[in-house]
Structures are given as C-alpha cells and as structure tokens.
Length: 91
Image (cartoon, rainbow, N blue to C red; front, side, top):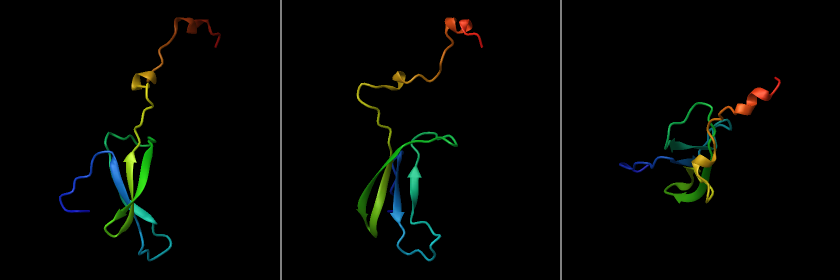
C-alpha cells in the first residue's frame, strides 16, 4: 500500500498470492476497513471488482449497503410490538 494512503471506511482490497510456498497457504489475502461497528457473528454483503494493481491484479472489495429505490431502513421493522389481540391466542 502506498505510504500515506488512507483506505475509505467500508472498503478493502484482496491480493492474489502468486508466491505460495505450500498449498495450505491462502490464495488471496488483504484488508478491509469497517465503515461501521460490526458485531461478532454478524453477516453483511460485500461486492468485488478485479482491478490491475502495481504488482498484478487485485480484488477490490466494498461493503454492499445498497437499498432498493423506494425502500428505506424504516421499511424494515427492527422490533415487533405486541398486539392487543395476542391475548386471544390459546398458547
């Protein structure tokens, strides 16, 4: 990475390893700078683009926070509130 380069939050890069010494070494390595707090076990989507790099191709990645047009976070309820009719359920 170039000296003084500051990666943008929510982005990263993976480098294809061309000088593997053993088959058990990873094929790809890199880094990702989180753009938000990530909880252990949380799953989130990423998107990637193969781009030419200084020493060969790299896989540029970004957190995929796309929300379809017309949808907002308020369209997806975070908490369910009890309904007054819930007491009628016999279990």
